[in-house]
Image: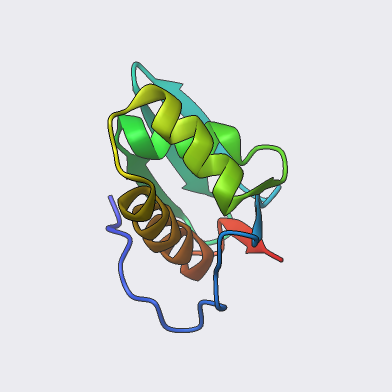
Length: 102
């Protein structure tokens, strides 16, 4: 399993950025977690239950603010912390080539 880490090359991501999962990967929900396979790179990624919720949300274009609304509806988290955590995950997913940021 490949750990997602490093923000090199990530665009500036704000609450208004639109995030969409790229079509070139295969993903599956496993219980409350998600597994993503990038067949072009042969890389596998695992997401915990919060990451899986975010992943499922971005199967259609969604702003960071909309993603945070979904997360905050499910979990007790402050808006600023949620936004920072969502941006961090989106940056990692972008660096791995798994999402588009507009």
